[in-house]
Length: 212
Image (cartoon, rainbow, N blue to C red; front, side, top):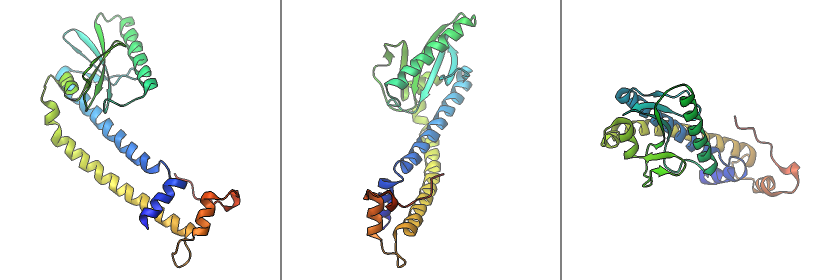
C-alpha cells in the first residue's frame, strides 16, 4: 500500500518533493562542511568568511591572497554556474586590486570531497578536491582522514532528522491518498484515481491541498 501510494503521488503530484528533502540535506551538510573549512582555516592561517559575492573564504599564505569558492563535490555545477563562479573570481580580483592591496591574488574552487587530477583550469583558477583541498586550507595532508569521526557524527545526526521528516511526508501521503482515493472500507477507488490522473475532463481532477 505504501509503495503504491508513494509511486502514485510521485507521478501525479508530489514529483520532486522527496528529491527536495534530499537536496535540503545536501545543502545543510554542504553548509556544515563549508563552515568547518572556514573555521579550520581561521585557526591556521587567520582566514575569514568573505563578504564578496560568490566567495566563501579569503586568506593569505606566503604572500598570496587566496579567494576560495567552496563546494561540496567536484561535480557541483553546470557550465553556466561555473561561468558565474569565474565571473565572481574576476570581480573579486578587481575589488582587491582597486582597494590598493599590493598582493598576488589566486582563485581556488575548493571541493570538500572527490578528486580532480587537473587542478589548474584555463579560466585562471585552481580546483582542489578532497585531500588536496583540506591540505590547502590547513597545511595538514592527513586532515581529510582525521575528519572521518566528526563527519560520521554529523551524518548520523542529519540522517535521524531526515528519517523523521521523511516519515511525516509518508504519513501525509497515506492520509491524503485515503481521503481522496479510497472508499469507506479503505479499498482503492480505481475509477476515481484513473480519472484524476488521465481523464481529459478537468472536472475529474481532484483538488488536492497545496504543499506548504
